[in-house]
Each structure stands twice: as C-alpha cells, then as structure tokens.
Length: 85
Image: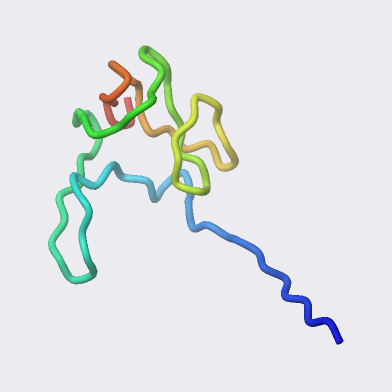
C-alpha cells in the first residue's frame, strides 16, 4: 500500500510586509537589527550592479519580479543593495 503526501509550500510574502534585510542571523527572542528603506545592505552576493532586485517567495533575490512583485532594492555593486530604492 502506497502512502502519498501532498507537500506544498507557501509563503506569507506580500507587497506590504517586506521591510528590509536582517543585519545578521538571529535566534527567536533575540533583538534584531533590520536595514530598512534607504539603508545600504552590504552583506549580499551575486547581485547585478545597477539593477532592481525583487524578493522571491523562497526568500531569494532576482532581477525578475515574482508574484507578488516585491521590490528589495537597487544593487550598487555585486554585494551592496540600497533597500527598497
């Protein structure tokens, strides 16, 4: 007898709830620093300089807008992004 599990993934990403990037890795209950609108996040990699990047539903960044279309920011270099600009 076969048992089949229907595994689906979902996201809570919306155009309203992305506020920026965590400054580091944090555990539950810890106070976190978040780099928000107009902040410069310099902890990225593989960005396309001069291009707008969008948050994907799996948490990655892409130069192609996903659904929903959530702007992460504009890359100033391959490691730096100007948040939500």
